[in-house]
Image (cartoon, rainbow, N blue to C red; front, side):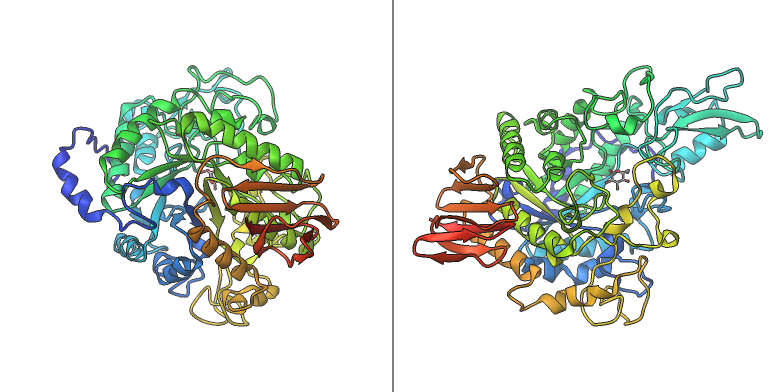
Length: 572
Ligand code: GLC
């Protein structure tokens, strides 16, 4: 299934098949640039809904919950990988890009899911993992089996080692997951052989994008899923595909600390942009505005903007925003820089607070600032949730597209006390790498009932691949539905207002209003958003009629008191 299917010359006559697969528009005419203000919900398939009771989420489970997502009011759903994979990195190690892993279902399930979503007016974005494959991918397996002379080795980065007997890695690069970024192979005759590059786990060998067969293969994979009707791709490690010529040494250890500050020889190389230009042409061949979203960790928002130039991808995650603490001045600055950086390339800014790689924002904000994005202490939960609700209303009031990670609408905290023996994050098992505590945000979400797995699986008392805390019964969808004070109802109301208020989401500007220290106020057309990031109440003239707030805000005699750690939406 994964042989090189070069199809760059595919005849345009296939367009009829594409038309048939084109989705119903989610929020407007097909001519509308739907992604510019879309709210995109991330489903982590392992942990969303388990239809067959094996403790692992699956595609039929997701399909059965699509009406929930439609009612929540999101525009699109991004699915983390569900492809055939040995799961060395929870599916971000793909063995076959055109097959569904049996633990998630079948290609027919994927087809049914896409069709159902379109019928409900939801778009589907799938994850594409082009930086590396699984070590079980047919190409890599053949490259190992066939030995040093195998032409398939050109599709990865195989190199002889340094040192007298090749016993040292070819350069000093470190894996993002810890340890060296190189693993030595064994030749078919059992002697020690060449090394191969893996920026992540050893089970994730990096592709060599200088090799035309790799580029051809990915163009074909894009078409495969576009023909299935998907509305776009989230591109994993989009900044990593091209490596600096000659794979030069970095010249120092602790390289993880440099990520996000310096341009590294393995990240954010200018050559990646040529790849996205070629992909954009393919996306544009299809009707219905199919999109590409870059997961690009770059040193600055300005460099992130390079990925969304008009002939490249459509969106890039705004990780600078995700990394900003709950502090008014810092938030204002990152909002300004983000909008200013995207305006020249005419791309929407994106906003994101949580995903499957970072501690959930309800827990980040429960802890003191400066602890990073992998935190192991629960902190002050009540405070964290209060700030998380306020942060969400701020995010949803900004111009551009917003991402919601499954379970944040339930106000879920990270599970910080998972026992070591249940953890699966590969970086947890590699010393000195990234913290490796990503399992805490990946715990299956609670839907209903009082006994685990709380409706995640079909049977009370049944399994879930990570254990859920007992307190989650009170946080289930069922428990929160209809309770006007619940976080779920806050999200539902906010998304409903966002859908009807055209000033929210649209455009690229915010007009800042004077606001006391520690607070923010900005106007967008007939709408004002107020934010208090301090622990003290702040009295201001009421900006208008209160539409929605993260906690109760009292309006009295033309004045309002912005409650501590709160956001308000006002009609003016
Ligand atoms: C991305 C994914 C992360 C994965 C890594 C390697 O950062 O979001 O989950 O571990 O790529 O594929």
